[in-house]
Image (cartoon, rainbow, N blue to C red; front, top):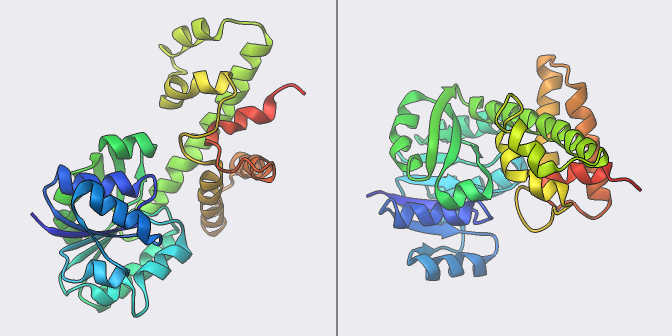
Length: 291
């Protein structure tokens, strides 16, 4: 059993923190920007809540973060009330936020100065993966830090791997998101085409899902896409747009040409402009509807 803090109780972090306590048997203290949510988590799972990241991290062996973006990471990690101020020497900070490789490398350096380990560890698998403890975790950092954190990560991981140096986890998540949106755009156009052609889409999916077109998105999202249902589940379009902008900024640095991704980012901008940014990222399908 380890003493663990979890900072950020969104749709992913809330169940992930729960697994650490219930499944992993760890002593868990949580922090959330909304104190009421942290208190609700503590009541539900029997753990503790803390008023600041520093208080949550105090005396912990591991601190896990899962917040919104680079600015949120810095706000939670730095300053007098930040996690780094509370971490003891020899602890490991694990960042599950989907953020930039820049902030991952920056945080790794700050942790080294304090004698603290660091692993950037963004996740894939969506809300269902978090709830079921079946996440793919892509990691960047030093081997020793990763090895220490792995038993804790395995509590909610289906697959966990160290990809490379600090920032490699975030870069891998960018690969993941670019691949997903390219697939979703193609799937949206294919399903829309099939509907317009008057095909029985259930029969179509039964056939093509057994061939080369098979994918998780096809099998799990085709029905809601065909029915035009995008609200109240899944990974928000605004979150995906944020992730794509991180990837596009990195692409400029490494010379990658990603015209399709850039176009799809604009499509998500149109969804957001409609006031539908919290809809599932399969809402790309909605942009193709007749009329």
